[in-house]
Length: 323
Image 1 (cartoon, rainbow, N blue to C red):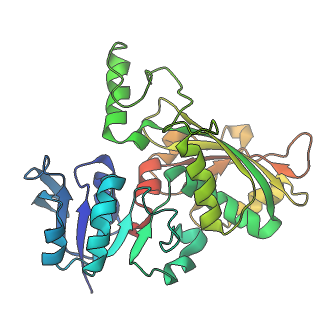
Image 2 (tube, rainbow, N blue to C red):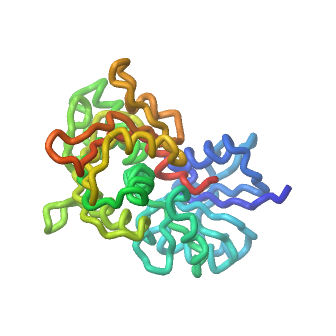
Image 3 (tube, rainbow, N blue to C red):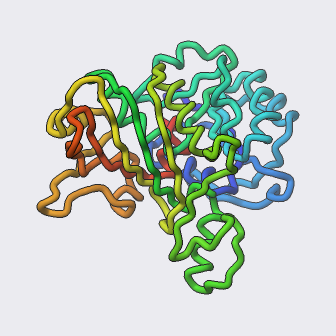
């Protein structure tokens, strides 16, 4: 069996840990494995693929000296900007989990269940991984759009603290124990609270996170229907949730939407209200699929449907290309 030499930039972070976990779960044929991070983390040990690995400092010299087949980047967009092109120029296929390349025209932004064909046009050998909330949304929207044509989407997200990495998880855990613990990751306390801001505000009044969902969805789906997003941070460790209100160009029943989504790849329908069967973050937090439920008809408009979606945020949003 062919094996692949893997470099993981950002190996010491929450996303890096999840990438390792996904590769191990899927028995990915790893040859040599290199864990990279900042100079601050260099020398520390991590466990991966049955061995201890010393973390190396991320440098351009590393990629020119080692024969890397696949390089995963999850150390921030500044690191990706500097080192991802170097890795690609030295023969690696780069899978970048940051926002830096997502909207660049010559870099495919890929959700395999939706637009795998875009991988055929990858001139820079760099593949961008979308925002975690975008991934789970387009997995639901894509089959519905192909069948019924979407006219508009309104989405509200309820995003777990894991989306902010280890520091987000740490702030929630510490503030549950001590309400006076500092706000190390978020602008307000997150324990027993809800924060209607993810990333910085733009002049439009929307946040960067909200505009990511709009722009990335348009690029992935090759469609430009209007999208309005509101992104909210909630005191949940893992798994983002979303409430979608979808307007179609023609009448669509909840039954039609439900039956179609049952056939969608990587989507699990949990939708039996009489037994309280519907997606929750706990149900989704140890799974790689997107869970959808509470699919219902709009009371006033037959062109509307309103599903609720949950997905394991780190695995889905940050390690989606590992397969």
